[in-house]
Picture 1 (cartoon, helix red, strand yellow):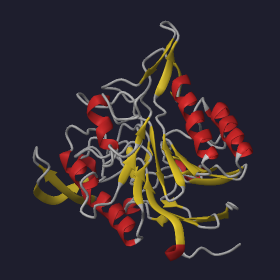
Picture 2: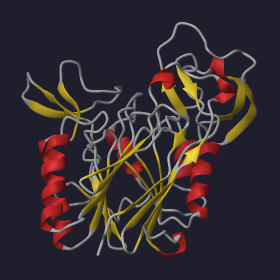
Picture 3: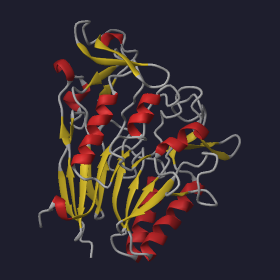
Length: 358
């Protein structure tokens, strides 16, 4: 396999997932997002993108919006909905969708007029350097009583009670995805599909995966290597696999290594981390060492000691290279799940594959 020269790539981007930022809830910090953005800048990435669950409270986190959307490197940034974006009132789709990207006016939204309207359609794509990046929304489910597909609601972190097929795209978005991919195939654009739930069917996946994979295969049959990557978050696990000549990349969480409901703390009060308080405008007002036991989800979460992200490089001849990150379990406190499930580890693996793009 030909080695990739990162300085001679057709496309370079930085990706991360499941940061779950909310002051005082988890360990994720503005320093973590700065670390990821700095990595993208130093890599000369064309853009930075997240695979959902960036923030558990957009309305209450102006410091994160300032750091990501208005980043000091002027990097284009993008993202997709996770199942926690609407978790806290009053975070509605109307409020959150405009913060998926700092290029809202240049992406092509899935609305009838292809522009951002009321925010109730949050899937979109953009073209760059002969590639099409397709950002989906896997937060639809089916209401069997009303016989309709609906999006996750404000104040929730999952499908409404009684709904079926959680983590779906739904039929309208599936049709849009098919049209978007076949349009790319006709234009000989190479596609990277980004989602929160996976479509791989290799690990946990969306109920729509069978349909999505058929669409992928059909597009690639029309124009070989139309779909070259499918990237997801959501599971807080580390997987990369090749299937039908498509690289499926399950991006591990930034810091929240494992979440296990508990009745007692696994950290001790003297196990602390750097904490910053912010005012209502997102301005830092106080910094100090804070105990992990004081976090509202500290009892239920096992954290990594440093943030995870990955740089992806795609060469002109089609080689795909993923440069991951390694961390450690903070204070050496390891969840039992990591002992039996190899993918629950403080790491995003490296990977390289020739996609044979001509």
